[in-house]
Length: 357
Image 1 (cartoon, rainbow, N blue to C red):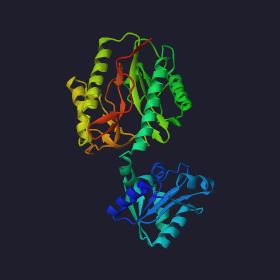
Image 2: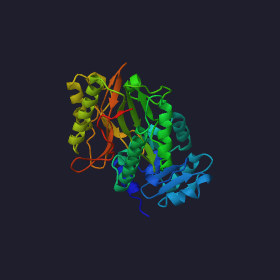
Image 3: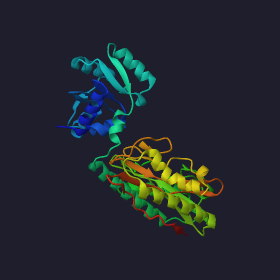
Image 4: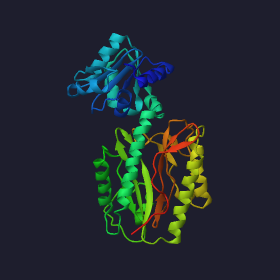
């Protein structure tokens, strides 16, 4: 059986002059093999694809990773790696430097004497940046579930509710409809706490006449969605309306202008320049967006520091914000796929200034 992801990985290894790659990152392992168990390693050479795991998964692994030779590893997995490399005549082994602690590296160096250990970065992650049709279909379902969750919770929000109870209700709703979990710790930030960009749900009680920022996502079939809407309970002041409309203008402008061939820096400027023009540039302290997929934060980044060129198949968030300490904050976020001509927006929740209560 041909695994297209293994084929692409081998091409990347060949370009880097590597004979083999030892994959220890659990997300990368699942992406390349399809295996979802809690323990396992991949060893990829030009001709072999091995999945090493323990006794618990010797039935599950072959079923989920039919393109791999599944091997029950020794008590020390590196001893099995050593044997496989020796039989294959491998002398240079790449390893994921960002996923390996120094103690593991030291143990591997001792066990694999005579084999050159070559640190590499983002080999699999670069492949993961470009989503195929099957991945995008799952991410569309995850985005739809986030939209449904928002519609559910906004129908319940009212003064007197606790932020943490709101987050729990959202989690239960997503899980009851197929999500494994939330994509990350749900942000429910009300009143002055809405000025916290990552104000995860607290014991604060919702009150009249304040923002409620909801930032959450569904982790569904191995992929994440990420949606933010800021709603208002009660009667907003002119200041509340002002910053909401600025963020909305910035976000809508970016959605209309982002296209392939643009750098992450250029995409970031689409929102940042508008917010800065209104005098709130210093109140927008994070990037316009980030890559999204099997992890909630992946490459590429839409930020002032990103020179990554946006390419069809990349999935990113677009999430400008304004945060005023002591007053409140607004963020509006959607998930999008870069297409040949522009973008496809996966999330579809309304963005007009929603007044509740």
